[in-house]
Image (cartoon, rainbow over all chains, first blue to last red; front, side, top):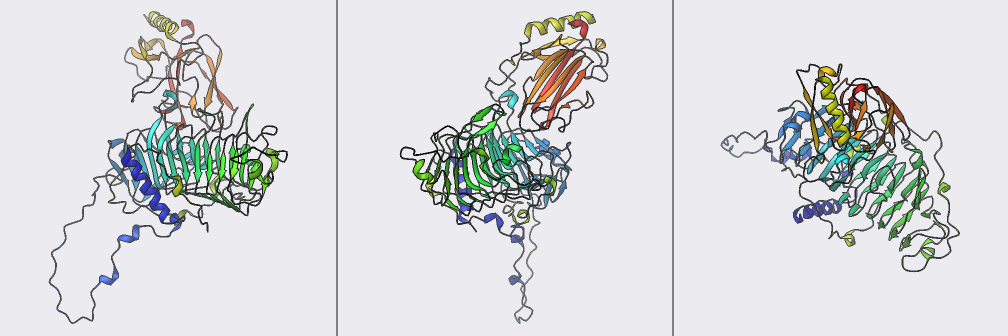
Length: 459
Length: 172
């Protein structure tokens, strides 16, 4: 277990060290293996030509002993069905109009080129998910999933038999214009989602639902042009959403509670070191009516509990930076309680911090401390709702209808939503030769070092 | 012989099926990949089940497995199944031929209903169950075993699956 923890932190720290915009770099890694022109012979040289070297042995076309698509199997599904635990399915460049179901534990599904390997659902209900995984320990990496009727990549436990999927990893995946979620984990734990990109979804780019404790790390990802950047219904407990960029969505980050899934209420997430900016983008698809109440807010905690919001840079969000609110859910009003908003930097938001009225004159344990901010409701929020003292006068709290809703024409069919950052995402390094790492070793999060996380520098 | 087979089927259903509670569907703990339900294996002469959806060319009696957690809804004209995110609340139900089943979306996500055996009954599209409160119905007139699934959150054998077992009207 410790081994995989170490791996997680190496991955996370490596990405952090490369800068907050590591995925925005234009290199793909594919070109790195091309020869160096400086090695070519100088035609002006007078030296004797060297004797011809013996020809090098032919390069192994399949050094990973992978199940290759299309060389060995015409479809991804056939390769996946043939795989046994420990195998890697290696997908060649091309467009694949198929929906892949994975029912084998501990395999790796890898594309040879993130932008060049495209699973495309053509918006057909017959191709609901790009990849749906029912098995433990599966990793999906280095490919694009787009235009699926429901979800891009979907890891799911089997709700019917109470099977919680354990162990999953998503790395260097691009999810575009799938109708519901880009990357979706449901009733699944022990996960790592990293270096991925999601745009154009009518719900969230990244969704983690129904897990407690989740034991999930979501790091170094980008989410833009979605209805929600990140959503986590009834998901918490060793849940770390750190060092991501959530930009230009309709609404930003939303840990939340709903009775439509098990394990309510949501509780116990950590949201740290994220750059949450420019949300309130009208060129996105409208999701459910409920989310329109939080249009243009960088982070909203509706019915969320015991979360730590720490050292994020929250800037330029159209209506608000952070809002703590109840969530109306049919006849139920889920209250948000005991959240701590600490050490964040706010700038240029419609209003930086909002505490929505939930209970008459009661802050319900939510507190605010050491933030760099200018505006709040109630005013001077760190004085009236401090983390280390009694609450003050809360008569200035506002209703949930506070934020200005979008205009009727601020809506776009999800198929037409743009994904401006998609082409800039990096492929994984050496996809043809990098040894496969399955997700079968369970990470531990008890030593997660929050002190190492800093406020991102932004643009 | 046919009558005897059906009678046996119904007797065992009456003895083993739960009431309206799905009998620990969501309470049990999973151990490895073992199934969590026990089953009774019944021999039913499919000659009696004219037009049954499960076997295009029956060569003799085949088993129909009735899980212990199946709900006995025989003798009712219409029944309802709640669709949650992401499960059918009443996962296995036994009904009498001619019963109308109505699926109602109680979740936040859209769902659909597709027969695991293509053509066994008419699918219900995600458009019909797009939002909470949406519902759609099918009448099952022919006895047989009708496994189904939501293709958005499962496959014919995994994830969000359900099953309708239809027994002849005169066996109730």
